[in-house]
Length: 226
Ligand code: DC
Image (cartoon, rainbow, N blue to C red; front, side, top):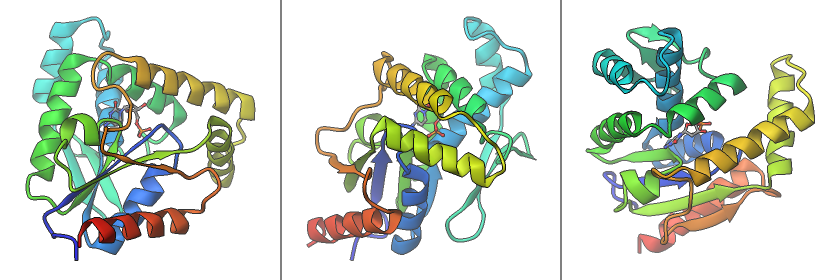
């Protein structure tokens, strides 16, 4: 059985299914799910609300010093995001906040603060950490690292279906363009760019359902645990 203090990382581009897979894997391993994208989204929301320009280093510093960010487990495989005590879990889940988070995440002060917080949260292990730089930067010694990918077209199709379920009708091309821009920005930035760790297992979920991806990861974990 995998060590209860182990860390498993899942990195990958937006829309590859990381959240669903990470939640499912965390539940199966009885681990805690760490959603680091939500942390960047919450900081993006805080900076936006305060009207802070991303070029204004002093203002960002001040905001980061005062901000209180909490991730509170909600049931077995969910987490609530509290920004200064306010539940912003839903507010941060829009495509627009995803773009804001992507911009904010290129800022060195923001990355430094969130990397520190993430390592604190992962200190005791027993987590499945999801993001862009979990295996490369934040937890380089993780027990098992995965890089979850899917074609941009498939990711756009899935995102469109998710939004449709919520009653939102968004043009496919618009979603595909947003996804492509985020991929480009996240992987070209200087700090902690999106890329697989050298020792990551790459999983392409384009033609796999979530249960199949989780089963494949569990098998890989079991194999390396022997
Ligand atoms: O996974 P997500 O869509 O919630 O992430 C939102 C943005 O946050 C993403 O475009 C890039 C950034 N991010 C990051 O830079 N590093 C992480 N570990 C997680 C997210």
